Image (cartoon, rainbow, N blue to C red; front, side):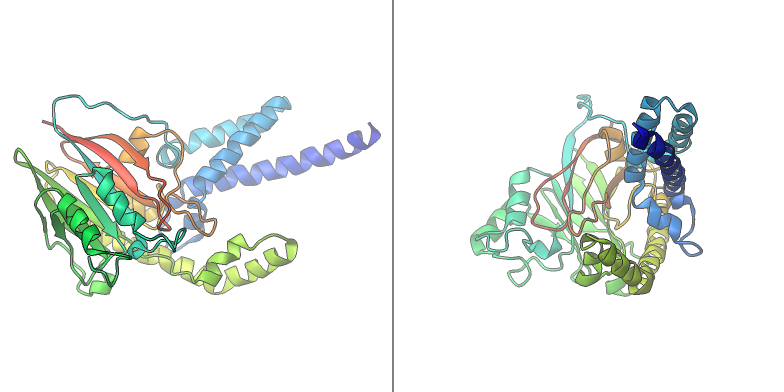
Length: 370
């Protein structure tokens, strides 16, 4: 009892300090996407972990409520209330919808397929990524990190597998100079809207898909600039298991990793600005979906630029709680997005759990509005 009485003040003092730090980090993370990374990148870095800070804040609110400490419980509640708008994208409270019956429905897959390498089952005799596409029943499959539909890039792309894929999706589009491709059940054509000349720097491409009954869908495929971390640099996070490894990791973080993170945030801001200018030229009454590998999270600077005031987030509207779309190196973030506008309604958006790539696919269901 004596030890408890002695330790109790120090324990609660530590918890108060932790709570203040977590609440502040949550607020900075929530509004980090409002700070231009050209001038300050630390808020963008915290923004990556916004759902985790929000969860920690909620845990602390419950802790202080159980301890009947009103002030720090109230501070936590105020923190969540302040962050509600950005949290509604990163930690949504939506739910799936049923079709209204007044328009055709369709399914879209957006997926960074990592050139269809199978990182979890490298000895698999077939190709799980291609098999997933064929069996998905999707009307449109939007792919990043794929340059060629050939056996030189697609693993185990046998003639029979190739025939099955192109039988399910007889139409395809995309330049060989970019890693953005589209497969479709219906006629598809590139819109040639890119304003960047160097193919290696083209981080988006636009396509027009002609659905039955004279329905047209414009799809803007996105693959924004990545951090470009090496395998060793990515393992800096996963290898932290002691004080010594944490010190080593911090030294590495202050070096090349920090520079690459700063460069990545700034490059994505440029990519997002270029894409946004193209989206502004597309009439608002045309059904539009913007999807792909943003390499950044909801509420981030690049996400906010692309979304603007007119695009809606299909995941935020149809799901409850945060998502994880990247699955390696303990970087469990929601960096693949699906936005839309025009006479469309998002019915559902799920995260597929096939783990052949380092990204999970997004599977969106939409309905044309008459």
